[in-house]
Image: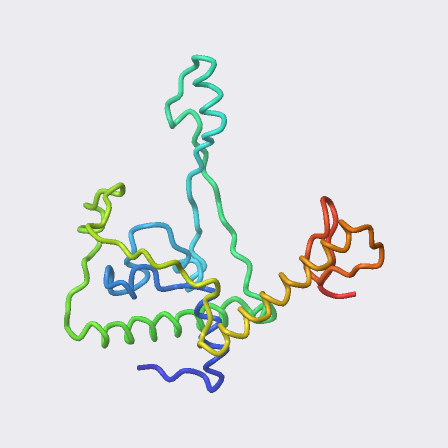
Amino acid sequence: MPRKPPHTFVWNLIGRALHPWQGVKEGLVAAPLHWPGAHSTAQLVSGAPLRGIWIDRTAQYRARLKGDPTRDDLFTSSENIDLSPIPCWERLEEPKRQALVRRLVKAIVLEHETRRAGRPVLGELKILGQDPHDRPARSKRSPGPRFHAVSPRVRRALEWTYQLFGLSHRQAAEGVKTGRREVRFPRGSFPGPGQFVPLRA
């Protein structure tokens, strides 16, 4: 397995930010580039154009109300998507960024290949053969985590910070309701319509 950089914590965060493992961790495909659905991996590793289609459902709905034709092709346009580098890579040249992503993708492929221990992936053809509206026989009922973090300690810190943020905002809002003028809302919050407290003074 390719060796990760010494700053593994940062490398994990970069992996989460780019999320180049569509279908790999679930055992659906062996590599991100094999994923038959929408993904950005090809552009991240090689600069390949990222194109998609946009169907204007709002205009289609209005046409339906008027009794006009509503075929999808009448409201479909092609869209090009240009990705901006994540902040910690902004100063890197594009070839360097692509090389780093290729390294990350290779590590993801080998890691999950080891985890599968010889079990085959579902594969592209079987994925495309699935009914997109089908439902699993059983699904998890537990709520998702409030934060996705690299460790339980970081998650607890985020939850505690969020609780303090909410408490400060509620206390300030109650102060406004009682007529107090000198109240401070926490940074990054919205005291009222059209207002915002910046993160930095």
